Length: 134
Ligand SMILES: [Zn+2]
Image (cartoon, rainbow, N blue to C red; front, side):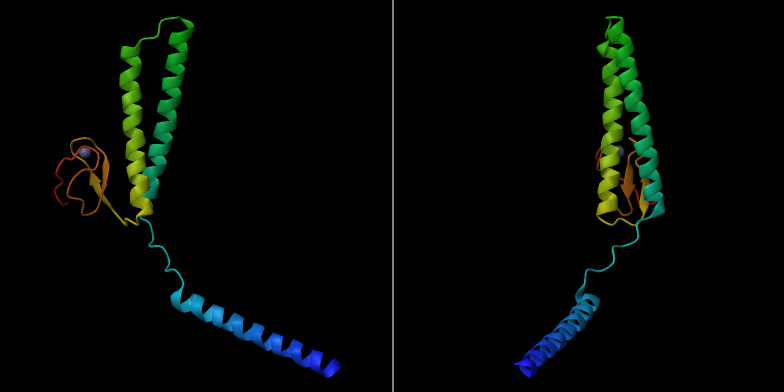
């Protein structure tokens, strides 16, 4: 009984070792490739936009509060500011997509609306302005 059990356990051990060697080898050969390095400029630009968005959002909230407590909410003042905030938000979303899709460099800023675009983009994703290659 004892020799049989020892043999079984040693066979199991061998199997384990084989399996782990195999999995290391397959992780090396067919594992997911490293994500392409993201242009640090993209990350820096995203950081600036996030900061700008936070400042604008807090300003808009503060402005609304000031108007509300005076019972004089001026939509003509708030709406353009909200639109500007929305523009920054969508620019941020665009930048985020560029980072996620592995864009490695910024092509530049759209001459018409200022949105950042990826290297090689033919049109601005924000306002459809045709873009010349820099
Ligand atoms: Zn544009």
